[in-house]
Amino acid sequence: MKENNNKEIISPCISICKTDPRTGYCYGCARTNEEKIFWKNKETTCEWKKNNLYILTQRMSGWQLDTFKVSYENKIKNGLSLYKENFIKIYEKK
Image (cartoon, rainbow, N blue to C red; front, top):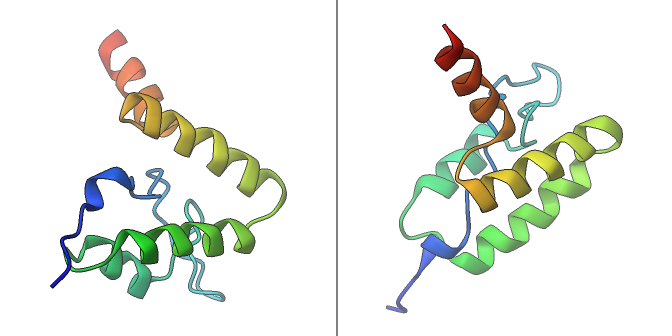
């Protein structure tokens, strides 16, 4: 079995977890429930994850794609999606 280092591919979840009932895609990351399961599976390869990230961005357009790109980049750099980062800031003010 090939060694698999999935730590280098960050999950595309940006904490906007609601599934569109018509398409079955998450409003935040555009994944299906099946794809979410694959992302959590330790046997899923980095190659599959990279390919899936490409597919996800192809499903999105307009503000959804723009928001995803900014939030996902923030998650890669800072460890948190923009939604979680902003939620923490609001919570800390209370």
